[in-house]
Image 1 (cartoon, rainbow, N blue to C red):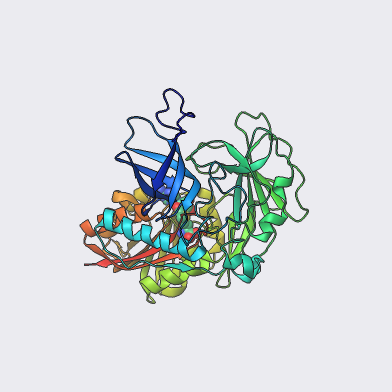
Image 2 (image 1 turned 120 degrees about the horizontal axis):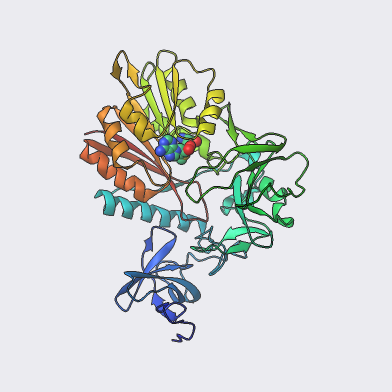
Length: 454
Ligand SMILES: C[S@@+](CC[C@H](N)C(=O)[O-])C[C@H]1O[C@@H](n2cnc3c(N)ncnc32)[C@H](O)[C@@H]1O
């Protein structure tokens, strides 16, 4: 086929090739083979025959990447995307808009199984469960059934002309959007993309799952001497700004422009204040689903000592505290100072709580806040790390406490599988695994693993 788009030094980039598409792989793509090389292909499905454009194809690379641009033989699981910018070269946010929702969940379960097999040497029976969108989010039943209208937090990038959009896959280019179909009606109704945001780098819409008033958090472009003007947003919406940050840095301090710098979330009748840009799950049913899964896995008993690692604003800390009761004790460890301050307010009524601010890896090694009668003690542990996982040092320190059960909440199945393998080296085995579709239309999934001593 034609290779006229290839520029010198770019290998075969731009070339159109015909591919027989094989299994799904972690990351929102499928595997194909071309001239003895693996090609990761987006916008396709297992079993399809497609024409694909090579998007990364350096001569010496171990694998190439491609976008399917024409479907020659379609999978029965293929559907029309709900989003006009979901295709090749478009928004990099959703990977599976072209896939039937039930089939998306099967693909995610395949990925979880494959990662557990390859990285942890375990054959697991994985299924990805649907998580209902609570009525308070205002999503229509039709949208909910299609995996749309669920996202309560949407971070837009801003292009050079001040238009809001999302980054293209593996590119800095911003694809402007008018309306994101996976966002809740509350986010869409803010109408943020309808106006220009010159001078800003990112704009985040936060509309709590409770349907409470929204917060907009805007980050200026680096180098601005003072924050640019905030365009008009609906009257009841709070507005805050945050300072520019690097790609892997935590969000900077939040400054109030109008209203509050935080939103109020609610799970199981408990309120949680979450300061702008601080961590909270983006699916409004996530709090309930993960709380239930963690409690089911650990079955904490009254009087036990519980340890909540990467505790954020205190969602799972609250559940553990309720379960172990007044005779029990809970230690929560969190690295983001604002999340710790939120947790302190959210859990002010909890007796026997120790909140520790610091990196989990260091706190565990220093055993700060873990002592009971002179001995470090944790009967049950929750681990809910960021995408990179807990990693060997933290896993070793958790295992050294000899808890009777560990619930590991994971947003990346590869990191989970690697950490499960490390736990096995320390005598802890996988006794349970559930997975939840907290991110419909994307390749992401959330898992809750139960680990117990062998
Ligand atoms: C996936 S969130 C979980 C939050 C909380 N468990 C919840 O359910 O809302 C991960 C949390 O870990 C925190 N974090 C990231 N790296 C950390 C580290 N090395 N030490 C302590 N906390 C960290 C983040 O600030 C974030 O609050």
